[in-house]
Image (tube, rainbow, N blue to C red; front, side):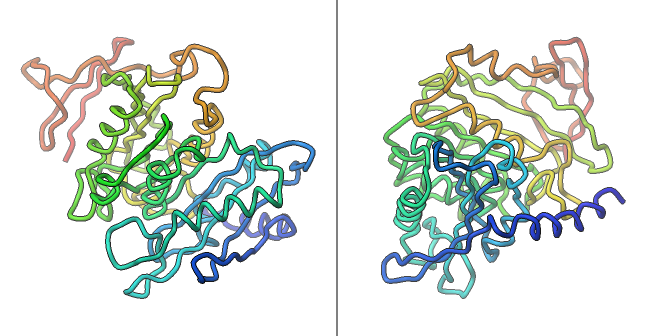
Length: 343
């Protein structure tokens, strides 16, 4: 019942803040492109504001992403602007962003770059604090910006997205860039272990850990299973000691599907122990184009009130890696032990 009560509130928000929601168009490569820009009440032209790109998924649209991967309430407090770009139709007639998996010749990196220039000409944007996130195809698109526009993008976060082989082979980041990935191990659309059109999430994380010169041994934290009836749990995996004091982070959702965690449109495989939008902004807000903003210990900036994983053992006490179809015991630094069966 609580989830159902959220939906009318969404309608109220759209009406209440409609004067701050701007439907715009620009022309790039002789194509008329559209976008939705959200400007919070507290924005003032006297102060420079961060900007977040929020890309929709394959077959979706900018308006749906504004509601589904919603940052507006956060922006109302934190004061950043959100731009929701609209994809074009690929050769099959589906809305998309061109990330190199075929079916399109559209220059979406150039579109994003021109969109950034357009918005920064109209608003007082802090060009050291421009970020990108997105759902599925929008997550892939965020990786494209990390690869090709790292001199302008301070950090990215991908929710259920990945990298194509084309992106991997053509990735040319000029700077260190913080990366966050949020992904379910039961995602059937963009499989965690990879597919014919994308790399595995582990391979993607390893690529950025290497590029950013991070410690290859992560801190693994188990988050409290606050909502037990979503039938999923979350581990927060953090790679520290990267260049410029940044981190690479993964929220691994056990039994999580192809969804945006914490979204208000209930779906059975959605995790509600975290809210993806909240976690993404917490991550973005630590960084600008030069790395960690506040000169504090990166370990302190990622300190959390839940235990860290020490090791995984099987029934015979042997230390093992995660395996499917086997009962395993997770040993944490607070002395707790968790038994799991991963199918």
